[in-house]
Image (cartoon, helix red, strand yellow):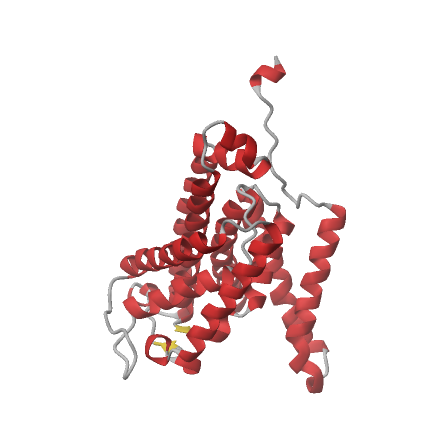
Amino acid sequence: MIGLVSYIVFFLILSLIFGIAVLGLNLQWGFTGLFNAGVAGFTAIGAYTMAILTGPARDAVLGGFELPFVVGLIGAMMASGIGAVIVGLATLKLRHEYLAVATFGIAVTIQLVCLNWEYLTGGTLGLIGIPNPSKAWADGPLAQNALYLLVVLVVVGLTFAALERIVKSPWGRMLKAIREDDIAAASLGKSPERVRLEAFVLGCMIMGLSGALYVSFIGYVSPWDFLPIVTFQIWTMLIVGGSANNRGALLGALIVWGVWTMSGFVISRVVPSEIQAQGGAMQAVLIGLILVVTLLIRPRGLIGEELHVSRHARS
């Protein structure tokens, strides 16, 4: 029984951490229409920033600042935001698939930088010893994970509440107006370029927060944690749950991560050992099938965008 509870806690922590990244993507795609295919790259920036700011001193590697956990989270968001400003200024004049290709290329570039810049990232070996604050608060893996789950729940709750207020504010309504028709929005005196950049930066900061929470929980970070499959997973979570709906984003994260982990368990038990090396490919194919079925049957996702009718139209 304790083993089952431990697994559920572990599963919820990772699902909700992914859910934070999905919320960031939802702000960009669901509410603003920005096709960001570089999610893994901005998550990596946040993760490595957390590792550098909060981790112990390492030989021939930048770091050793051992700053508090909260400072690491803030630093991760700021670093991802700065990266997003640089990328956004260079790419946000592109549209749709062109923006997707550009951001995907940037994410691959970030992953290669993490792989080769050993002084900053530890190279292929990555960085270890990233502190988990729950280990100082409790004894035993289950108690520590339960406390970290509480931390993640608080962060998810704050992020969700903030985004709900943002998208229901005049600025949030402007996001939707630009998504639907940027020319009409510009004719009303709005600046689509500035608003897109703001939404892109804020979404990437949330992705950086997700990466920081992930590495603090795992205690280790390497370039192999941020391969393109991560972007594919997060996009699938959003589409399955429903874009332009923050509740749908979190639901999609729980469902898709549940399918991913359960399929991995089934593959490890059912598939012959000699072909289990292809298990990751089988999981990716399964997630791809779920994505296709969702687009065919429920193109708006399980919880699609809430439709609002003007009170003047109702009357």
